[in-house]
Each structure stands twice: as C-alpha cells, then as structure tokens.
Image 1: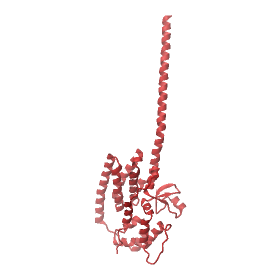
Image 2: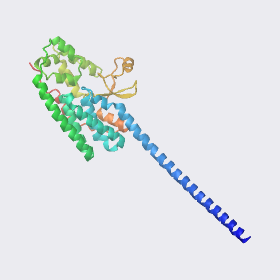
Image 3: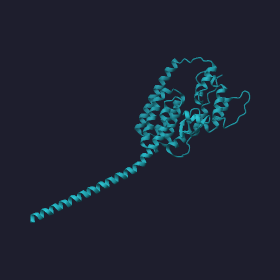
Image 4: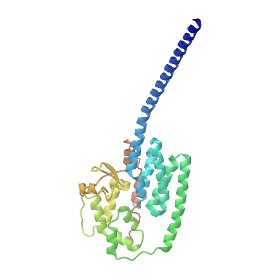
Length: 317
C-alpha cells in the first residue's frame, strides 16, 4: 500500500511539474508574441515613411531625365539640391537610389557633351563630396574623373572630324524654332551662320509670347529687339529660376513633371489644358515636395549671376 502511495505521489508531482513548465512556456510564448507585435507596430510607420519617400522620388523620374540630353543638366541640378538640402533627412533606401542616380549621371556625362551638362555635373560632384559617406563619395568621384577623361577624348575626336552642314538661314531658323532657351543660346556659339540664325527676331518673339506675354505688356516699335526684350524679362522675373528647374506642377494629373515648353508631357493633360502653361516650380520647391517640408529657398546670388552669364556671348556681326 505504501509503495502505491509513493508512486501516486510521484505521479502527482510529475503532473504538477509538467503543468507548471507548460504554463511557463506558454507565458513566455505570449510575452514573445506581444513583443514581436509591438516591434512590428513600431516598424510599420517607419516602413510606410520610407515607402512614401521612395515613391515620391521615383515619381520625379530623375533617372529617366539623366538619359535625356536636354533634361540632363536639370536632373543633375535637382540631385545636387536634394543632396544639399535634405540628404541627411532621407531614409537609407532612398539614399541608395540617389547614390545610384549620381553614378549614372557621371557615367552618362560623355554622351551629353554640352557646357550646361559639364557645369551641372561639376556642381553635383561638389554636393557629393560634401554629403556622401567616405566610401560612396570615393566611388562617385572615381566615376566623375573617368567621365571627364572620356568626355575630353570624345570632344577632341569630334572636333577633329566636325563638318557642319551649310544650310540656308530660313531652314536653320525653322530648326531652331523647336529649341528651348538654353539650347538656342548654346547653338548661337557654334558658328557664325548659326549665331545669325539664332538671333532671328521671330524665334525670340515666340519665346517671349510663351513665357512672358501673360505677365507684361510691351510697346512694339519698328526695329524692336525681341532677343533683348526676352533677356531683360528673363533676368528680371523670378521665373528665370523656375525655368532653370525644368519642373512644373500639373493639376490635371496631380504630379510634379518635367515640363515640355511649359506644358505637361502627358498627352491627355495637354488636351485638357489647351494652351494653359503649368505652374512652374523652383528647384527647392521640388526638394520640399520630396521631403514633405516647407523650407525656404537657398537660391544664391551666384545663380543670378549665372543667368546673366547666359547672355554674355555677343551676337556675331
């Protein structure tokens, strides 16, 4: 009887101990699950914020613009502003996108071969040097130096074999009528005949009507110089900086876009808007859109000097 009693007591103790262990394990599992839930809940807002930043940046289509000869300088300047004004505030994933696009900008530089592209790339590498961590900065600088060497070689080879076609002035004027301000001014430096064609008053009157006719009224008289009139308004008005950003806001697709002659590049938006121009944006406003902030502009007086520098090349006689 005693043996049976001891056995029964042992079974009871074993059962009790097993039950306690199961309870402890169960409680630990519950605690672990609760901790995991809290961690997941804390990480969700951060993940959502990172996704929001990344989506906004992708919507800006900077990478696509870098492959476009006309938009390349704008895209480089925008990257530079993003790095200068907000790089430290950006999540890690978005910094990786920006680093990738900076490398692309330097690799594509030899294909651009314009003074505006070189200036924009020089500005970008300065921003990279001031903000990127050491390893990324060194990689970017190596890409930039290799691009400058390739550009120099390509430019030298191009100069040795260049053979500009001799086209009638009226055909040149027609071709130049499709250019924007920067491209038109750059073309004026190519040769004497191109300089004369780009000085044609009808070209500058069209540009004046496009950019300023809704802002100013002018008195037209015989011999009126439309190029000079455009230059004065371009330097005077704040829109000169806006024109240099290449950006506009389209209310029809609710997007920040690279404008096409002051209009949204999307066909459906152009049909809806008619001839109404976009709301132009300064570069720092694009950065504010990306960061979701309302910081003030850091546009400097040196940029105003850069605008005046566009007109430093005299008309050849």
